[in-house]
Length: 246
Ligand SMILES: [Zn+2]
Image (cartoon, rainbow, N blue to C red; front, side, top):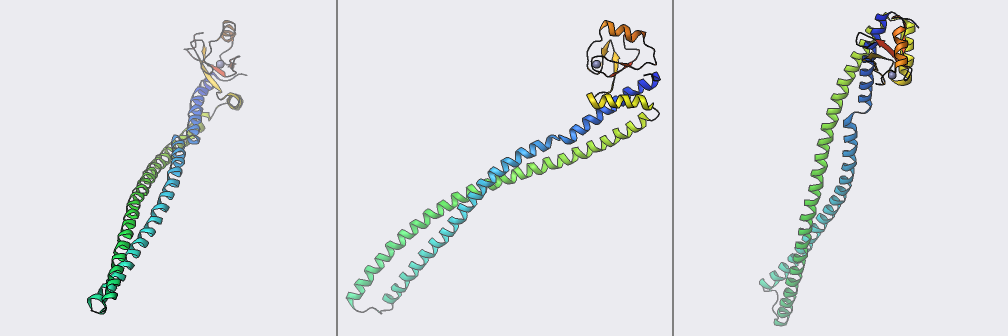
């Protein structure tokens, strides 16, 4: 194939733009924040499961504490009623009084036991509340981190999409006027190997970075400037410049 040397030179600009487009598309499909967010969400799920358990334990203990308080209250009320009967002189018979005072002593012991039980439940509730609060704080902290990363991801995606649109626009302008057959060949090679054209620089292929062997070099030297030369090793269009070392 033959092509205007200027058109061939222009392929280097197209290749540079295509490399940018490739990089930007890769960035968009592999936004670094996405992997971090996924990892944090897995961590959040684990902690949130623990938080749910801790909240259930706390709520159960709150119910138990309310019940213990009510039990103590009920027995205290009973005691005060009995005491009122004595104070009001309603119990006149000494035998009845004796029996009632024994009953009051019984009630006092019962109150002491119930109060001890309530105290234990209160201590457990306090500890369970602290644990649940700690888990809730960890979940909240992770939520804040995830939100921050999501915002950064949105920003990075927007910036990259803008750059990508600019690059696509650059490409459209740059390929305008290039011969169809040259561009067709370039696109075909690029579709296959990722790079369509590269500079032959200091006897090295800019595409695969291999040095051009002597035999191929002499073939390139004898080629016309209008000949489209390709690297035998990797297939890219080798664009000759003053830096090619020919
Ligand atoms: Zn090569």
